[in-house]
Length: 99
Image (cartoon, rainbow, N blue to C red; front, side, top):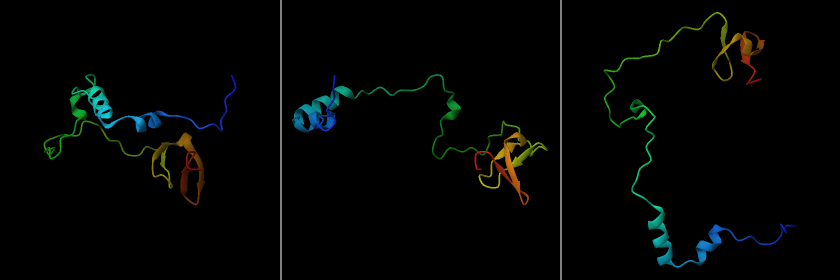
């Protein structure tokens, strides 16, 4: 079947423009629900409460210093493994993503 791409298209917004205000209000109430979608698999620690006091929390990730086989890109300032090195120019290391 051939499609005439120059013909005006009717979209969902065209249909809404012709509806009455009462129909739009009724449709809005039908589509909204009072149920909040909550991911039950997500841990509760991902939720941040505004004004929460986190001063008693401890860091649970061990931070290691830069290793001998790693470099910091002079453009994006990310730490990369030496295998991601694209070039070294005047003591500045550039990763493959920035090159």
